Image (spheres, rainbow, N blue to C red):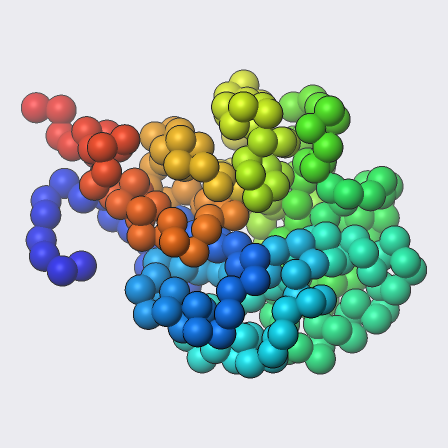
Length: 254
């Protein structure tokens, strides 16, 4: 930090198990990646190449090398995993991870129907190769999953070998954990937390109001994802109580 302030919440240190900021790269150029990292690398824990953007991203290996040089792991979006699975190309997906030296992978079923046992088997297989993040929730805003099912899915996928389970929200934050307006499904989140440790969940929260809600509920070291590159520094100020939305949250009451 550039100067000293008291009553600032303590942040976990990288590499962290909680307090993660996952950033979504939806097609940054190499120069944009370098500029982004020059400002936000310290506050970025992991990068997701959104959905299947890696399929059409030029100079992909060079981009991955820049992130790797900065010490920030990258993974392909879960939609790419689904695109391979639905075409019966799972073995080719595994070879792809090796080809690009990926240390992380996302397993999801937000766009396809997948039996839970099959999903857990994919997690088990990939967990022998990479660190797995498993996404729970549908990308279809009309599909409402009851809280007990979220809990059951998250528990099963963690037991199958997922490092973190991701609460689905899409890039806009209008499905899954959230209503179409972006409002948090508060009862859902609170019920999930009665059964699943908060450190094991990475909540997709692309909107500022959503980030504020989770920081107020779970503190500075909540895991948050689908953060836009230009929102990493603003998010860190939210975590530290240095933005109006959380300004009083971490201050002593007296």
